[in-house]
Length: 185
Image (cartoon, rainbow, N blue to C red; front, top):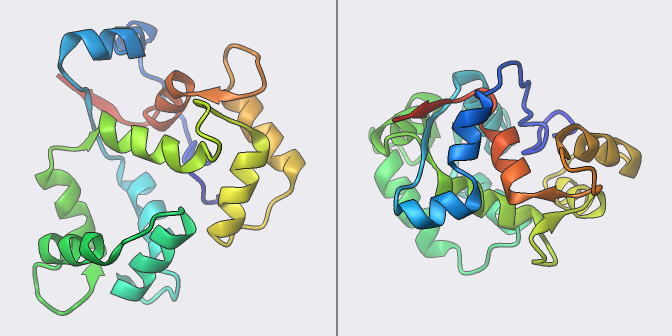
């Protein structure tokens, strides 16, 4: 994601959620409410995600492609996760996930849940300190096959960093990831 990335999931951010919506879901309020927000996926954004998995650009995701992305994100013991994903998503039984099946899975689940965003955040937070640095972003993007410079990653971080600390925290990441998504009540 220099053209890809979860941070360039900023993935063409054109709309913002109203500030009150985001503050309602700050990490403290999320923990107290017992409710997790759910966001409707933006089709353009989801197509970009799909294309990251579809590395050979044949319009479908194979189990090998799915495994490669999970490995690049540092996941281990992925066999059962891949098997489960294909059992749920591959509705026509051809051994691949096409874009329609990919979108259907997201719709069936009711959208993208806050937990999904938290898991994505953890994939970028390599040192586990609760912040994403430009260096961590660069490392993950390299693993995903993206070519970008540290300076480009610093610019991406600055574009999301609302508190000016030079890092992306969970609230900033959530806000960035949900810019183009509608909050489901």
